[in-house]
Image (cartoon, rainbow, N blue to C red; front, top):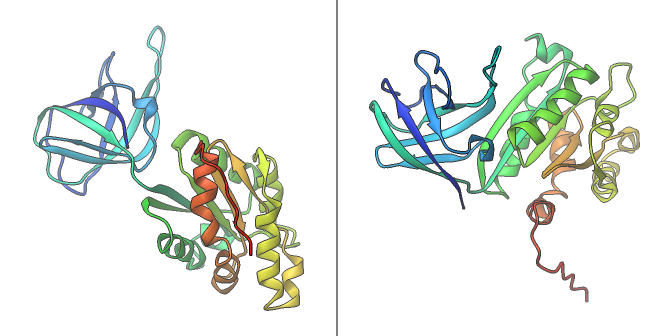
Length: 262
């Protein structure tokens, strides 16, 4: 799907696999940045900007601060997919597949004292059922304000389609994931929650302890997963067949939801 057309002007070369900062034209451009003419607000993470001699992936979106009479301007971080020479390029912004973010809640993980396996597993399992244009991971402490801010930014600011957390769904003093999630979602999905609980109970009675929440924010689906890789695999498995249809309907698919039962 073509989203929009953006013209990029590079004063210097952008090497393949590097990082290039880009901001909307209309004011002073920081040294080494790319000037963009076109609707940057229409972009989402994972979009591909492609023109003759230039090809980039959008890694993140932000703002270039203004000051005085100068307004702030939309900016983005780009990854060149091939070496791009200095010049002016008319690029089509194309969107194919879905963007997934996983968030691991772990005080030790955020401090570098534990290797995270659950977050990457979410990306691997989802990639087996969805066409993913981008997967990004985040490891943060068990702090509700930080999680709430990140959920809102990923769903509404960056344009991720699927945001899945892992960890913090139990009853420990630092288990705050469900409360933070409930504070930001707009529509709750109790069927997702029941499916995860059922999968856990089929393995252990301790599955009854989980307080995992699922719901939507904007056009993003947000789902809490447990903290261990084994539990992630068990709880995510029954949801995988539903993800594509859920995202399609959430993002405006007008077709009928026919359900055939024998």
